[in-house]
Structures are given as C-alpha cells and as structure tokens.
Amino acid sequence: MTNAATDPDLTADTIAELSAAYRETEPIYAVEQEQRETLPEAFRAGEFGRRDAEWVVRWYFRRHLGAYPDRDRRAVEERFESNPFDDVIAAITTAADRIEEEDVAGAVTELTALEGVDVGVASAFLAFLDPESYPVVSEREWRALRECGTIAEPYPDLLGVDDYRRYRSACLEIAGETGHDLPAITHALWRHGADGGGGQDRDD
Image 1 (cartoon, rainbow, N blue to C red):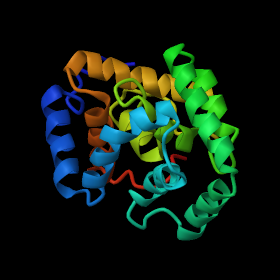
Image 2: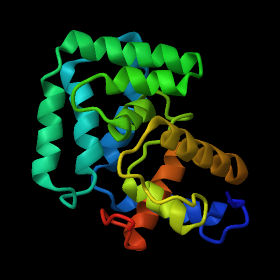
Image 3: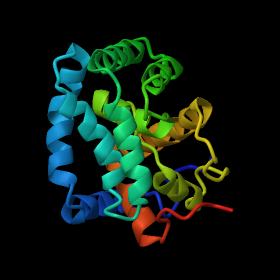
C-alpha cells in the first residue's frame, strides 16, 4: 500500500476537488446526503420502513445512472424485495450490533444472509449504518484505488469479506492521512473512476 498523503492522485486537495465535483454533479447526491443524516439512527433502532431498506439497494446500482445493466439491477432489486421484512429488520439491526463490536465479518455476514445482498450491497448498508467507519465499495471505487496504486489486486470476480476488509483499511488509512471523512473519500474515488474512465469495465 502506498502512502496516500504523497500519492499525487490521493492528496487532500485532490480528494477535496473530486468530492466537491461529486456533490455538484451527481444527481442523486442530495437524496443520498439526506439519507445519510437519517438512516443510521433509524437502522440502528430498527425504526425504518421497507422502502428505506429498498432505497439503499436501488441507490447502490442506480448511482451508475444507467451504466449498470438494467436487467441485472432489476433482478437484484426483486430478490431483495422478496425478503420478509422482519428478516430485513433483523439483519440490519444485528449488523449494527456487530458494528458496535467492531466485527466487520459478522456485520457483512448478517447482511449477506438476505436475498439480493452480496458483499458490495452489504457495504452500502454498512455505509448508511456507520458512514464514518464503513465505506461503500463497487468495482468503480476499487478500480480508482488500484489506479492510484493504493490496492495492487484487480477487483475480484466475487467480492469477499477479506476483500472488503482490505478496501476498508485502505480507505481508513487515506482518511487518516488526508483528514477527509469516508463519504468524501468514496465520493472522490467515484469521481476519479468517472474522470479516469474506470466505469463498469472489469480489470483483465
């Protein structure tokens, strides 16, 4: 892992610039920020509606603004909607408990027990449960880190818990070295992926 503070692509100023671009240009940002302010407490308390949970899954894919295959997106959303809502509440609130215990694997495992939730979608729930400690991950953010030299490995064919741990550690290290919070880091990585052509193309 390289030192983010000395990497020209991951300086504090570059992250500030890219995260500002995210806030200014991404059409879903306003709703995302509103949800980030309200969902953590609601999720931890189990005081949320089915649509709140479904929104997280939709957000994870629809932030691609059509670049993610529509049929695949709909299939995941429909699988998630098939979960009994009591199971959804139990998974999210128990994941919150695992977060309090600093049990990353346990939190991910609780969420991935739900239909339609893989590690990537689980990371979205974690990012709205504890935005300051858990970053969302998809191929686009991962690829941006790799292009900056922060992660050596290509995005895995099947993202696992250990992969998420490695990604999370990298993001937390960058946050510590640059003074930016995790939402700003992941926003910057998202814009880096857009500006750098990362998109949804896989690493070969």
